[in-house]
Amino acid sequence: MSLKLTLIFAFVVQNIYAKSSDEYVQLFLNEEIESNLIKVDFLIIQNLNLEEVDLKEKWEDLDEFIFSEELIYLKEEPTTLVTLIQNETNALTLPDIRIESSIDYPVINEEKTQVKAPEPFLFERIPFQNKMMAIEANLNRSRDYRVVYYNSWYQPAVQQERSLPVFIEAVKQDKKVYGEINIYKERFIHLDSRIRFSQQTEVIDTSKLVPNLINIQELVENKKRKNSEVEIEDNYWMETIFNTVKLNFKYLEDFITSDDSIISPVLIEEPNYKYQDLYEIKKDIKLDPETLNFVDHPYFSILIRVEEISN
Image 1: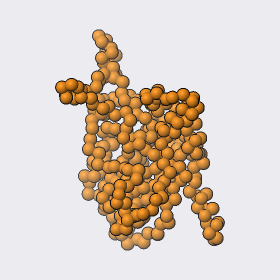
Image 2 (image 1 turned 90 degrees about the horizontal axis):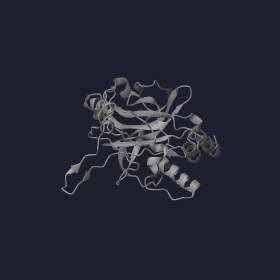
Image 3 (image 1 turned 45 degrees about the vertical axis):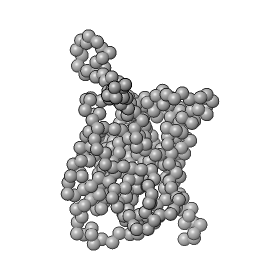
């Protein structure tokens, strides 16, 4: 195969998502995807207990990973986290918390018994997910698995041809997982994944090539500003569709903090060592909703749970 034909073939294979960020943002502005949302819990785990047959198997060498032209960046620090403010006595002041009862009892002061739960923005980490934190902790305590990546977020449920892939990257000790996933909905919800498991080398990486990461929140804001040609207020995002995800948190315990040991930086801090790609998960599967779906590989695996949210 000629070099020219090879390059054309690689371009066609890698760009499986036709939707550009500009077109994708327009869906938000037109409010076409506001009421069709998915909650995603996504983990990548390293398998420590390897079968003898897997240790002897010769895995094929992987070509250089080629990212899609644009990828959505998952914001690690939640926008909606409440910041505790110190008063003049330097004592921490807790926010005014109101709890909405699920039982229809007569209430003397209705205002004080209702809670307005934080409403997470799309494509950013959801804090204080106790159920998923427990799963992560149990996996890390086991002799067979280690969690290398974990995140939970909300995103629109759109068809594959209207979607953009999400960037995934995490480093734990001398191991790295990275790649991209696309969670889309046709008749059923699907996961299209290209994730690699890599080992750190002693060679310093001087390459300047980085994936083209798209911050959807910023793009929507910029597009809105451009279309309206008026200055956006500081509280703009509180009035946009990114803050219209209506969620009922059943218990206040959902807001208990925990030790989050998994950090997924956009770019690895210096010194930036080269990583050798060892294994790859490349699968497009149908997901069963509200259950943990398992994408297996002898050396590492994906766990994913999706839940459709009615807005």
